[in-house]
Image (cartoon, rainbow, N blue to C red; front, side):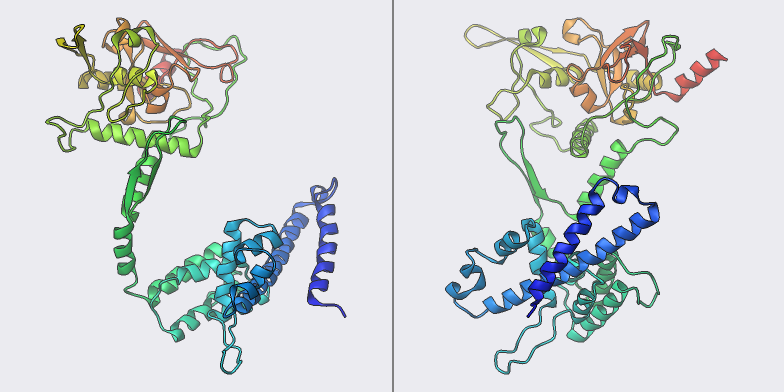
Length: 476
């Protein structure tokens, strides 16, 4: 007698042969677009069917483990701590996927009444039917049930929503739309939850206010400080807007970032090159954008006073170390030394206060070196550079810092002929990132790494539309 497990095993063997043929040489690669899409859709149907079997199997195991002692549970008898471990060992899925299977099983499981033995309907009977018919998978079940978590509504209303969502999953909804994907089901379920529980947002907001928070950890051995927390939706939205304002590439005709190998020796050296590869990950870009936002907030002068002055990051470094480029810097509130690059970066954009100590530690003299570019100088440099000077970087001028091309500690003046616009990231890594900058007759020139410019030449750089217009006029 062939059992259900035997039938599924035979189906798996047949599917394995088809899968091997699909990925083998001459398989799907040799098919036209229509056949590839048909194969993709068929694979999705098979996956949804497999999801139904997995969910029902977990629902059965969960039901059998309820009300029995620990030693008699299925998980215990098969050497697993819990259902999640049993799923992972049996199906080879991740812990996260196992959690989703358990959640889906809880939503569509049919419990048995202990007194009468009657099989009770599932919490979401419509989604259970859609799962059995292969119209929805685990991700769709989780999307729907997650939207109703914490929703205060009656059973009748919930069943009405369940019926409507199951119909949408099958492509039989009132709008006659094609079968909905998991994301579309989540969106529809959220609308239903908001409609059925008109007051549901306020308790959620109360919980969110209670759980909001942010913590800074201690600097680890890798030199990084962990940042953890939960943001309120409006705070996260405002932060995201700040990220977007800094990170979104401009669409004013600037070329897309990417490697730009220059091979023509006869190229006009006066024409700026504007493409480069940005090797940073999205997370790294958001970190650097966050740094820009913090710097801009501190420079705005609208933050509360701290110690009788605006909140200012003070970096301690020995003068000879800053001049020679060797040694360490020190940050406030951190006993561990910091890289000297931090001091060079801060020294380039902020004021320097020279404190001379005697042999016994007494303060002998206190001098402030004025080395900050004035507001008028910044306007002029912005007109000339137009934004971060590094090709391919689209950070606008208002988020940029002004870099002393010749370091102030080595005699470089705070003059427009010695200042260029750089974003926080390129300013922070100007000594190590492979880009070099120098001024020739008051014009900034950039020499990039070899992967950007095979000739590694000094080339004039500007993002200013006015300067670009002038360059075009000079060639015509």
